[in-house]
Amino acid sequence: MNSKFRAGRWTLILLSAVMVWGLDLWLRHRAPHGVAQLSGWLYFPVIALAAYSFGRYGNNDDKGDDGGEDAEGAPGGARHAQRVLEAMPNATFSVDTELRITQWNPAAERMFGVPAEHAIGQCAQRFIARHWLSRHPLRLPRNVDAARATAVDVVCLRADGRPFRATFSSAPLRDDTGKCVGATVLLRDESARHLDNRRIRQSLRGARDERDQADTSNRLKDELLATVSHELRTPLNAIYGWVEVLRHPSGQPMQSQAVDAIDRSARSLAHMVDDILDVSSLATGKLRLERVLVDVERIVHDVTVTMQTMANAEGVTLTSSMSATTGLLLGDGERLRQMLTNLVSNAIKFTPRGGHVSVSLEQDAHWLRLSVIDSGQGIAPEFLPHVFDAFRRESNAPVSPRRGLGLGLSIVRHIAELHGGSVEVASRGAGTGSRFTVRLPYDRPVAAGVPSDAVPGPTHPSTVLEGHRILLVDDDDPSRESLAAALRTLGAEVHEAGNGREALDALGETMPTIVLSDLAMPDGDGFWLARQLREIRAARGGMANLPLVAVTARADNALRRQALSAGFGAYVAKPVDLRSLARQILTLTSQ
Image (cartoon, rainbow, N blue to C red; front, side, top):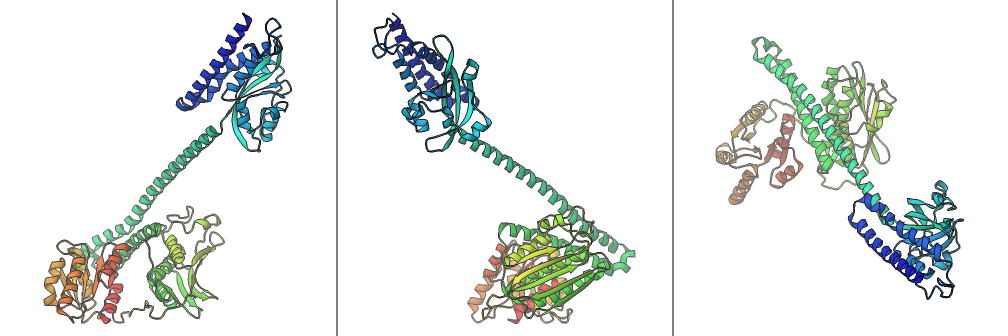
């Protein structure tokens, strides 16, 4: 009867272990993460029952209930306890009160890569990482409390020394008298879960970083809109104010002053719009250089002369010196001029009255050094690394009435880098002035036939376009009329057309020497007009080429390349600089 009872007990333990294993697998894949972590508790009743049965009947290996039947013949002996351990899907082993391993199931062999004959007799601490033991020393299972543990995270070591994460739970192992003689340990490999948790943490961290970046981007966008709004309203306010002065009869004596102020404000607006577009092109990698043979000495001279008016108005002395034996390099003349103008303008802007700004051009073995030195307010050491960042302005700097958008120096850096050079800044702190130095390579071979940026400059501005018949095509009446009036002040004969079809009809009557055309127009845009002119020239044969200049409000590099490939000889963005446009007209009509 006792033998049958033991057989039923061990069969029940074996079936319970299989059922618990199946439920454990289901929980791992279907249950929420927190519940799945506790699935190891399901094994406790099986472990406790097996430990109790093994401790009670484990000494009957040589005889059955009545002393004559051995364990091999009796299903209720220690052999069944061993079978239960072998059937456990998780690593299960027993230790004595000194942590020496006394039982080691096949799942433990697979997990650690150590066979039972090598593991039994070893101290369990051998299979645990030292750094974990140094922080969490194991308790010797000499009493029930010390032998009991629940879902403890541990770092274990495989046979080849590789660490892995695991979770162990343990229950006390008792003898026939109920005394604790060790512990039975259930160990579950948590490497996959640990990796999943790490990926989840990384994903959460990435999501937090993205959210922080989005918040930062939104904040910068709001700051940008506020800055742009402020900086655009300042010159607009000046324009509106002086327009009201000119409308009033008493304002006629101040006409010259009003015109100068409106001109400065309009140029300031155009400069800010250009800066925003340039930064956008630089950020997207769409800014391309038009490389020609450039005379940097001439650029230094032209910029210094141009900025002299601004320097005089601010009460700042502006000088230049050039010691370079050659100032020629392959580059984009307009971009280099823009770079130097930004540096000089920035220096004048933050130099008080009575201060000094100097521009120098020097040369060493392989570089041209372009320096702009001022005696202005200087730069704090902690802000120096951020000087060339877009939209960054020193928060504690004295407020300038013309601070701008904070884009000029960022554009300077990008233009220098696009030319294969660099820019750096030096300052000893507030009130000590600053020095900006641009280094440009000039040792590149100059190919024969490389075009130069030399453009004839107007010597007599009032008659520079005398003899030129210009056909101006634009669907915007105020824009067309104002530009036509400006061109007539330079001596040109200007005929106007509102779209491409009107321009085509006027060709026979006006016989223009050059056509200035907008691109986006209804009823025959600029590209349509360019195609028609090519077809007329091809049909008539031998007809002289009629130069075309695109004059458009879209300052877009892609559109610029499209216009040039369509037959336009030049691309001018609105608002139009009259002197620059005059040089373009003289260049195209002289070819």
